[in-house]
Length: 201
Ligand code: MN
Image (cartoon, rainbow, N blue to C red):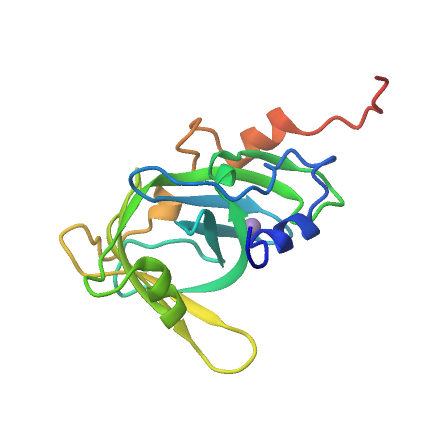
């Protein structure tokens, strides 16, 4: 393996002995790249947008969540690359861990790069990617655009104008639950609260 581990920061931030989050492994993808949006009730509620690129999930925290309205441009703050296996993670990150709180898989599917002259990874490097999402809730063209100068990169995440756009809609409010299990954040929290019992093994 050449160069640095893209999941170094992911591993450094977590104690995977106490959290059930997946191990940090770079892995080959399937035929079509995948995306996931996880709803995360951490210290403040946000949505984590993750798109497969180079064997990892490139990640952004979107405080207000995705919108199907092209007029609504959401702030997206880049966060560390996550392992591919994270796309299936739904559960409770225990207190005291990085990102402690409940996670549900709010949407999941595949995506396709819409830039004809450039690959998806190169588009992200350039700070302007356009792609088609084929999820359960999010469908059609979307864009990620890097904005602002200086030390803290900020991106905008928004729906492109097409036949699947829904002006005036509020998809995060209308469809709040998990696409994996149908559960709400509250149900997952109640059902999967980690035990405080000591390990007697
Ligand atoms: Mn998060």
